[in-house]
Length: 322
Image (cartoon, rainbow, N blue to C red):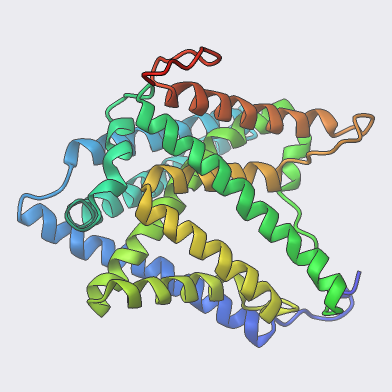
C-alpha cells in the first residue's frame, strides 16, 4: 500500500508528527505519574480518599495480570524462569500501583465535583456486579464502543471519497492468531487496559480542571490533547482529527454524564472489535478466533442488559401502572 516503507533497505526516520506524538505520549505518562503522586500524597495526609476501593482495584488488577502471565508467557524449566518471574512482578506491581495512585488522587475531587461519575464504579468495586446501575452503565459503554469503532472505520471510506492519502489499515496484535491460549491471556489484560484508560482520561480531565479552573476550558483542552495524541504522525491528520475529536467529545460527554464504568466498558468493546479478526467468511482459518471475541462481547452485552432490568422479566408484559 501507499503507507509501505522500505525499512530494510533505507533507515527509517520518524516524521516530525510522529516525534511530536511520542513526546506528547511521554508527557501524558509523566503527568499521570507525577500528578498522581502529588495529589495522592496530599489526599492521604488530609485523610481523604477511598483507600478500601483503591486497594480492591489494585488487588483485582494484580490478579488479572497474574492470569495473563501464567497463561500467556512462554515458561521454561531453567533459571531463566526466575528472570521472567521478576519481570512479571515488577510490571504487575507498577500497573496495579499506578492505578491505585490515580484512584486515590482523583477520587475525593471527582466525588465532590462530579459525584455521579463514581456511583456505579463504587458499587462495582464493592462486588455488586448484579446492581442494575452497573448493568445500565456497562450497556451504555457497549453502545459507545460500537459508535467509536464505526467512526474510526468511517475514516477510511471518507478518505477514499475525498481523495486524501490512505491511512494504513489498523491491525491488532498478531499474537491473538495463535489460538485459545492467546485469547485467554489477552482477555484479562484487555480489562486492565480499559480500566487504565478510563482512570487516565478522568485524571487528565481532573488535572486540566485544577490548572485552568474552568470546566468548559478543561473539556475543550481535554479533547484537543487526546485528538493530537491520536492524530500526530497520520497521513491525513485533518480528516483523522475531525473524526477523532468527535469520538473523544462523545466519550467526554458519557464520562461526565454517566461516569467511569461506561467509558471503561466502551474501551473494552472497542479493543475487542478492533483487535479480534472478526470476519463473515467462516471458511477462513482465523474465523474461530474472531467469533470468540464476538461471543465474549455478546456475553458482556447480555449480562449488562439482563442486569440493568433489575429483576424485571426480559419479555414480560407491561401493565398500565408501569
